[in-house]
Image (cartoon, rainbow, N blue to C red; front, side, top):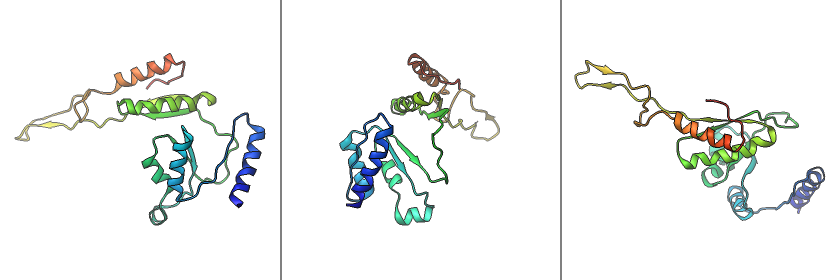
Amino acid sequence: MREVTYLNGVVDRWRGGANVPVTSAVLEGPVAEALEEQVEVSGADLLILTTHGRGPLSRFWLGSVADQLMRKLHVPMLLVRPQGDVAPEPRLERILVSLDGSPFAEEAIGGAMALAKPFGAAVALFMAVEPAAPIADPSGLVVLPPSPNRTRSGATRPRPTLTASRRRLRRRAWRSPRT
């Protein structure tokens, strides 16, 4: 089988120069389903996937493995898009983690920290909050501006949440730039 020969050659090239265990497998079936199953079977913590960089029309017609997997997988994905020449070594200096105030969103911090460590990258925490709408009385004569400390949902601004997350990062000896 030509695929097995190809994969064995790739494994041989990378196994020699890296002090990391490298294995391979040929999966049969629809690509997204086979990858989803392999992620589960292997216990992978991260999936790295190259994309073909198709436009919206061809993605609609042909489907997108990355789109399907992003909706199904419960592990982080790193998508690599074709951009001409590939740099020999990736440079990561700053990783942005988007939080929404939930414990689930904070799970992304661990992955960001693990990715940041070998590169010496900084981890920046980010939270986008929609501002509250102005309040008007029924006559429309008086409009009160929203409180600068309130959001559309009525919650207070996220600074305490981000500050607490930043403290947890510092306790683990990670650099977290001020927000």
